[in-house]
Structures are given as C-alpha cells and as structure tokens.
Amino acid sequence: MNITWYHKHFKDLNTTELYQILQLRNEVFIVEQNCPFQDLDDKDFKCFHLMGFDTDSQQIMAYTRIVPAGVSYEEASIGRVVTSPQARGGGIGKELMQKSIELLEDLYGGVSIKIGAQCYLKKFYESFGFQQIEEIYLEDGIEHILMVRK
Image (cartoon, rainbow, N blue to C red; front, side):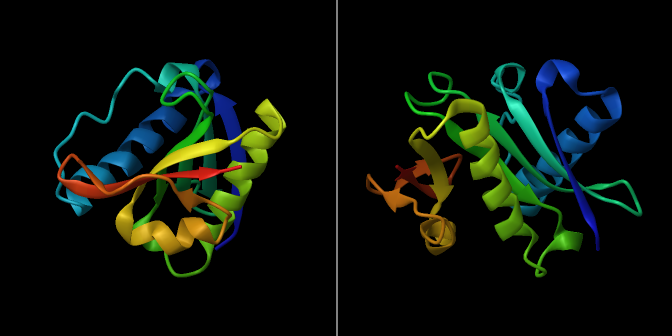
C-alpha cells in the first residue's frame, strides 16, 4: 500500500476529504471501539488535518488532528489519531505519528505537545518521546492518560 500524505486547515478541506475523515473517525472511535460519544466537538474548525490516502483507492487510511495551543490544552496537541483497520500492521501508525509531530513542529515550532492517550497505547507514544504526567482517567468509558513530549 502506497500512502500519499496531505495536510490542510479545516477551511481548506473539500467535502470528500471531510466525509472520509468523519467516516474513518466514526468507524473506529464509535463503531469499532463501541463507544458512543460526540466526535464533532467544534475543535476541528481551528485545526490542521493530516491525512494519509492510499494512492490506488484514494481512500483515507490514516488521520490526525493537529490542534494549536489553547484549544484542547495550554500546549499544542495531536488528537483523533486513527488508522483504518485495512491499513494496520504495516507501520502506518508509526509513520502517522512521526509525520504528525513533524507537521506540528513545522507549524508551531519546537513546542511541547500534550496528548490524551488511550492507556493501551502508552508504550507506542513513549516511543515518540511522550511521558505520562497524570494518573489514569476515564473519557467516554475508556481509560486514558495525559502525556507530554517536550
């Protein structure tokens, strides 16, 4: 699978890109994780959106939301980290996080990055330099931890 990466501010997304982003987030966060929650939280308008598309099918395979400081946390953030079930197991998640960190640094400089991570992904995020800063908390019935990368 060959992935082409794009990033756009919300105002620059076309309707097909927006539809595929929301469809992927819904498929994984709501259906696969069996977690009914309000995904559309008004933060998307203020964010950049990193998308990885399969060059053959033109379907979105990976996505993150790059959140400026002051929107979710005092620090900048990477959120809604998601890979398509069809793309898993080939390293796309690692590539997605590396590209997300690079994009955030290109946009905002060498700032701290704070994330709310699902607990089972702690080691994954630690491999990118994130460190747990608080105890476990429940968000939409799923255990999370706050992590920071300085």
